Amino acid sequence: MSTPKKPGFGTLAVHAGWEPEEKTGAVMPPIYMTSTYVQDAPGQPREGFEYSRTQNITRFALQDALATLEGGACGFTFTSGMAAITTLLLTLKPGDRIVCGDDLYGGTYRLFTKVGERFGLRFDFVDTSDPMTFENLPEDTTLLYLETPSNPLLKLVPLELAIAAGHRVGADVCVDNTFATPALQQPLTLGADFIIHSTTKYIAGHSDVVGGALIAREESRKEDLWFHQNSAGTVNSPFDAFLTLRGLRTLALRMDRHCQNALQVAKALEAHPKVTKVIYPGLPSHPQHELASTQMSAGGGMVCFEIDGGADEAATVVQSLKFFALAESLGGVESLVELPAPMTHASIPAETRAALGITDGLVRLSVGIEDGDDLVADLEQALAQI
Ligand code: P1T
Image 1 (cartoon, rainbow, N blue to C red):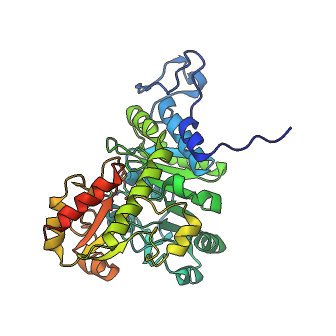
Image 2: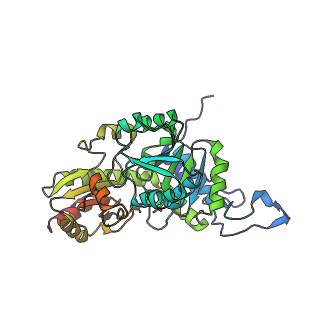
Image 3: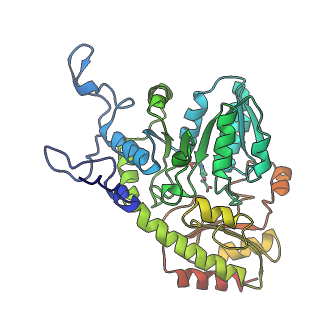
């Protein structure tokens, strides 16, 4: 007998984490809105179900689905992406050294510098797009924390190099896979130890629920992560888990369209006389386009650009757009636009932002799944206002 072929990503996205329920045949998990479970005798919960912070079937279905899609052994979901990252930090101890990218989501930077440091964690913010960073990784690194593509500058981490370097010094490697999603890259299959998601974004995909996930490659991590999820109480609600799983079912389809539209928009912007710079991993002009072609299956749905002018011109453009809503966040079916400097990355000091290249005129697009031609036309009419 031939070995059955492993199902493709689109098939797994539709089916992972849940088999139709035996009793009713329900094809989606019921929303188990219960805080607790009855016990037949003291200390004897039925099937191990004691309390919803610890065990909840709806959450388990989402957790299992995400673990499967990332190629991991176990997954945990949380009330937000920040709650997932916080719970990962709680597994560390004072003095531990975290080497992380210098271009990270502003909220992650804030958590690391304003909270993590207060609890004795040490952070090195370095250029994780530079291969030399991994040649010189400090020997006492505990955790290598990576975003690829990074938020907002869409810099890539050479994952194979980074993972090998992390393991050479005995560090765990965690990749925030929010921007790429497992539809485009699966760092655990390259040897990374943990994946973080803001499931608020592409995973849930409809801008209607905030959530996060932490997924581990090895089963041996399960007990410790579950212990910390339960101890910190950072779990998402059953209703949020249901919504997130509902969105996840169409991830493969949505990512195809996000990537196709983003490429079309990036090309149109690159050809526009009022645009001085476009950043998109799927364009040959991206400094790491070669790397993108080897470690990502497409360029993703995020595009950044700079306008001939500064903050005022950028503000005019983002306020003139019709299909791109001016809002923080990303990854929903509808297109969004924002200026990282005064919005998502305002918690990063102005000098640091300037040094990194997060200028006041940098515009970030989350390209939705509308018709690409409409999005290009919208950008053209908005650019015509300046
Ligand atoms: O917003 P929350 O679900 O808590 O996720 C935090 C987070 C973590 N990691 C990355 C890469 C992120 O982009 C985010 C959240 N980002 C935005 C809200 C934003 O507009 O960039």
